[in-house]
Image (cartoon, rainbow over all chains, first blue to last red; front, top):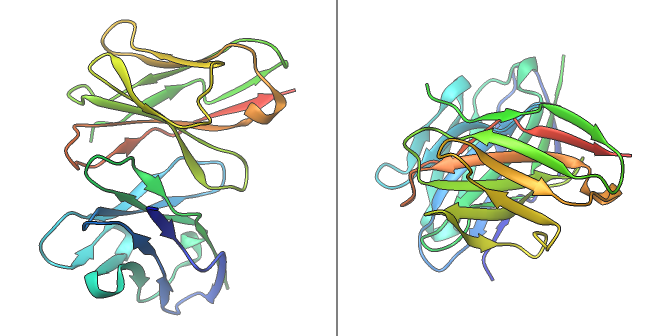
Amino acid sequence: AQSVTQPDIHITVSEGASLELRCNYSYGATPYLFWYVQSPGQGLQLLLKYFSGDTLVQGIKGFEAEFKRSQSSFNLRKPSVHWSDAAEYFCAVESYGQNFVFGPGTRLSVLP
Amino acid sequence: EPEVTQTPSHQVTQMGQEVILRCVPISNHLYFYWYRQILGQKVEFLVSFYNNEISEKSEIFDDQFSVERPDGSNFTLKIRSTKLEDSAMYFCASSQGGGNTIYFGEGSWLTVV
């Protein structure tokens, strides 16, 4: 069955530290891949997306993600986290003919 | 940048009442969606809508739910008789289809008491 997993439910990092949030998918073909961020009580904001081409994708707020076909992964990274990055992060996947599916989310806490 | 707008941002309703959540998708988009997120849980697909009909729905989208595009601009989600477990954030989304980005609204908080 098609699925999206985010192995880390909750991650805590110190401000200024680097960040990597993991996302793995299980689909028959290469899907379209997305990362969204959700601040408490807020909507979903698109950080970045991958459709094709360069496997390293740059997004807003200094985030980037790398698509690795061999690992079926699309991990989100940021070199230096800011306190305002504390939020819930959702990986999402869309495959042709399938619905847009969200992962369970990873909650990011940032220590001062 | 064009955006998906949703109203109301928050609604409190009594159990058993009907609720209509409204959405204005991005104007040149063809595919419309509703998702929901129960507090603290993942975002779940409810229904997709294309060419004036439901193209797919999840098992959550039972007979209590319906969607409509009444006037070519609005896209509504109706819950006929709300239950406590319908309390959630409901997100509307739209896209041009074909793998293009799905844009989400800010969500409508529904609290059923």
